[in-house]
Amino acid sequence: MTLGALLDSGLEFGRLEELLGGLKLPGYSLEAKKVSRGGIAGTRLLVHLDNKSVAERHLNDILKIIDHADLPPEVGENSTAVFNRLAEAEAAVHGIPVEKVHFHEVGALDAIVDIVGTCAALFLLQADQVVCSPLPVSRGEVESAHGRLPLPAPATLELLTKRQAPVEGRESGHELVTPTGAALAVTLADYFGPFPNFNIESVGYGAGSIDPGYPNYLRVLLGYIESEAAVYEEEMVLIETNLDDLKPEIYSYLMEKLFDAGALDVYYIPVQMKKNRPGVQLTVLSPPAKLKSLQELVFFETTTLGFRRSSVRKLMRPRAVKTVQTKWGAVKVKYTPVPGRDFPLQFSPEYEDCRTVAVHSGLPLKEVYRLVEYNFRNQYSPK
Figure 1 (cartoon, helix red, strand yellow):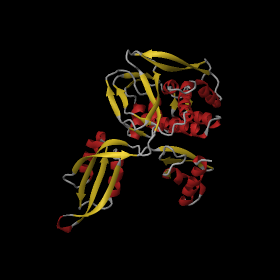
Figure 2 (cartoon, rainbow, N blue to C red):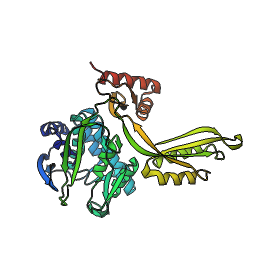
Figure 3 (spheres, rainbow, N blue to C red):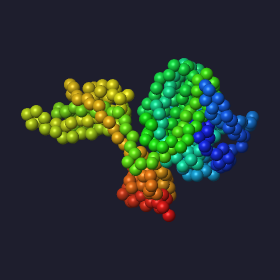
Figure 4 (tube, rainbow, N blue to C red):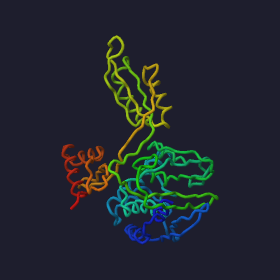
């Protein structure tokens, strides 16, 4: 559905086929055809398989295919990341090591084409940023290699939970988000939320395999940010309370628990309380959907008997991610695109990626930052 939507929005079918040829995988062909769902025209992408295709693979089998493929580095890295997330989710659901996971549906050739194809399509469209709406989920059952499973499928829920992705309940009875779709969304989306402020250039509709009588589409909007001052806003809730009798070692644990439960920000401020007692002000920034669980956690893990709660607006500049290559591995760099400028004014290498490079290379972490910043400027500054 994602590939169908990207093709429907203007991606050239021939360019996608050519890039996917780098997989060097025989046994399949692609077909894009126009369809109608609920009276709306869209595109359905079909992956046709011959009888010799492999129906089951382990994670290492798939990663070797991607590693040996002739693909742009960004496509290979994103595809690998999606499959790694899928493997971790399946392993968690079935209680087995990642290397023991059998990819049944998701390991089939058509799913490899779907996942690598989606990463390739975003690369061909030069998408700097991906924003995803809350995902629709429904109740019911679905057939799988393990028999009938409840909806949302356990692997889908595991993926959405790890990213704390927002969902919307639908009374459909059909599987609206598959594990493969969930893995693509949680891996490739820069954030989940409302429409950013941007100029829409094209719209695409990618059709699903079923026609339930309503527009069963994944919709993609392509566009660009025109104004340098463009920001997007979200409604948030601020939780604050003052603490003066909590053991100091608990504060680190409390912060981790709050972030794991969905807090967007947690910080402590030294304060003077009644009778000039030294204390700590706890502040938690919560999405509305996470408010109840975060409130309960503050009561459960601290000594407070109450807290202040207020609605706030969170304003953010759009962010995008580029990948910089080093001989020790890839490092993601977050930056703010600025229309009218060839190079961003603000950018920052990802700490965890830099830390991994520092550990493997033996270089000081500060030198890794300098190396990545230098490479980023060379790769993306105007020539």
